[in-house]
Amino acid sequence: ETGVTQTPRHLVMGMTNKKSLKCEQHLGHNAMYWYKQSAKKPLELMFVYSLEERVENNSVPSRFSPECPNSSHLFLHLHTLQPEDSALYLCASSQDIAGTPREQFFGPGTRLTVL
Amino acid sequence: GDSVTQMEGPVTLSEEAFLTINCTYTATGYPSLFWYVQYPGEGLQLLLKATKADDKGSNKGFEATYRKETTSFHLEKGSVQVSDSAVYFCALSDQAGNNRKLIWGLGTSLAVNP
Image (cartoon, each protein chain N blue to C red):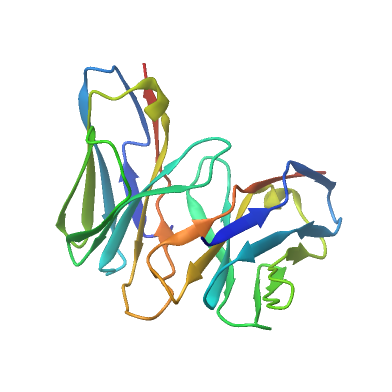
């Protein structure tokens, strides 16, 4: 039990669909992350929220839209995706303390397939 | 920029064999180093970490020593089990830069046969 949950675990969607991924952390952390994991590529950091404010956005296409309504919840809204967006999407959380390397705790991921 | 290089897999071993997965890094500051493990169908879990030179991280029989002179953080285990089959990721967090951003290796797949 990692303390970070993600739903759904699997998602199949068409290119014209709109869907959302949900992440919830039960660790009392103040920072949350979205990552994309694709085969043969390093883990890609997509977004970082600290204290519910977006602090990192690594050139992610606008068809991915994050939302962080509070420190425990993080969403990734998806619309008009492309087949190359098929991947495992991982959520993580950490306690954000300036000057200290932050151990990130990961959820199990959502396996997304775009048809 | 900072980077992490891991040995390519897959690595296939018999149970009770000795494991080494190599990891080297380049960084401008004084990074902290991590090994994460991803079991089939699951997310990543922190396996061990080291925050300064000569530190040894250890957990579940795995060890890794932070070697600044060789910029390495190789993962070792003396006797692997079938349950160790997973993908192992080396990562660094550069204290001199953006502490939220981990730099990741590509991962090394390990398969342990009974």
